Length: 134
Image (tube, rainbow, N blue to C red; front, side):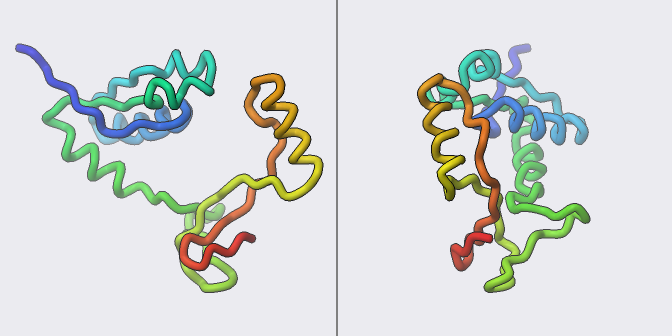
């Protein structure tokens, strides 16, 4: 009997794929990860290979999508509550990195020069509703 697999999701980094594969496996769905070794060897190649891919058996595809959709895409505080925007009170807030000062700018340039992942960046939150950063 030949099993058929379907692509559920692809991710920029293998760490993201491992988190979501763990969630699916905790729900009893067997997950197959592809291209994580390529991306781990050089993260710049992630776009070239289409990211790290999560596959599940066809029979589990619908349930896997439902499970992944149930995971909030927005940022949570330490009590697992959605972070609220201080300006508009919306709960559609994501963590972003930004280059706001000279130190983060030079760190970014050095990381590009030496082809490594940026080692200094400031994390901020950005509201998807009013676009405010805080």
